[in-house]
Image (cartoon, rainbow, N blue to C red; front, side):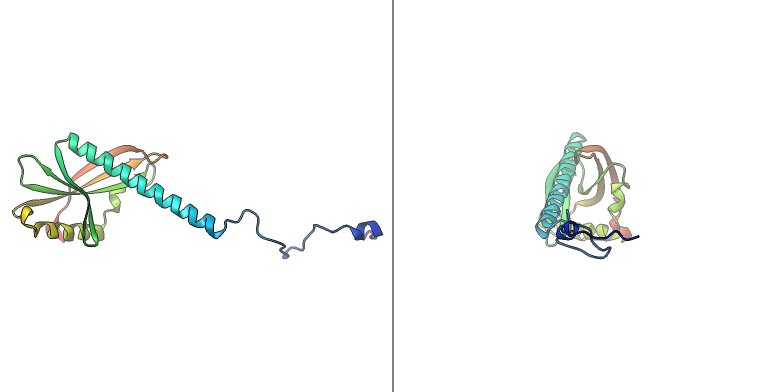
Length: 167
């Protein structure tokens, strides 16, 4: 039952589109600049989260008697988050800090065999320096759970998380 089109109806443009027809740009589709900006903001949030976690870990360890001697120590392409010593010991402690939002899996699970290998290589490079000759290495992990605002909520210190002799 088709309704006849009057002259008045024919003069008015129709807004109806065929199912597969597309006119103009997609509504609310992010442009390349918006995507780049979003990625940059997400990257900055991740960096701030990591800095907050490392700061919380350093404060916690110092309260437990650790002496933090380096932060974000770069050794070629390798990095040690925190390097510490304990008074009256011959230990040089390499500390990996891992942060995750609360409710996700445990942050310490992210220290896999590859990361362990990188930390072991970095420790070997440190021990080759004269100032660290004769030191014993210990590998610790500090797991930090963050809230929605990227602030540390819960912190776990795993001493002797892995051993270099097992690799």
